[in-house]
Length: 287
Image 1 (cartoon, one colour):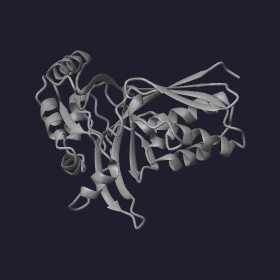
Image 2 (cartoon, rainbow, N blue to C red; image 1 turned 135 degrees about the vertical axis):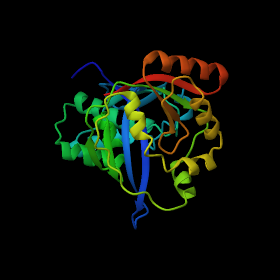
Image 3 (tube, rainbow, N blue to C red; image 1 turned 120 degrees about the vertical axis):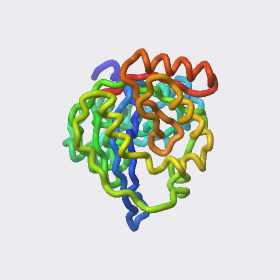
């Protein structure tokens, strides 16, 4: 058995998000283009004679370490599926804000599954793994892929996109947690038409132009829950070189797309100086 397994859990970004319907069971149907940023949490799993879980990092204090944590749930469910005892020492370094619309909990769950499968030397089929991931949360399966993907239905239909251009992101969270159910409860209006992403932009400018034909249908509702989102979007749109600024998921994290690293880092530096209480990161968009 290896000494320890470390798995990166990158932030998940919804470049657009359309609400296309609602099922009888209450789940909403979505169309979304998802990418991952080169910043995130870290899961480390090591051998142990019992299951233990600890957290560190800047946002560890804001997260429960009890059985409701997705990391613990993932460990128990994987062990049950494999028919083994869940014996491991798991450490989560929590670098991403909590309830922030960038899939932190889902990414942590996916990284936990990956780490423990290697630690425990479990063999699962892809169908078994993705079924388990879907039971943990709608975003966990796409976080397992870690690649740009078009996601539809309630999140279980995942289609890898063609290669996207190398772009940079500035991510901003104002420090106000936003509960996804509350945002959906405040959503009003018609549903959007399905709009699969089936193009191949060659440059960040072209990507931003194509994305301009879409939107995040939850922006208005999320701003009702957390009005500061409008301030974040205004601040991002005022930065030099931004190609497109938008809310990710149900918020409150927003992002801007930039052509290169220098522009993104300069924007992040400026935003952090103007808003020292906000969480601000410049990160490459992973391909």
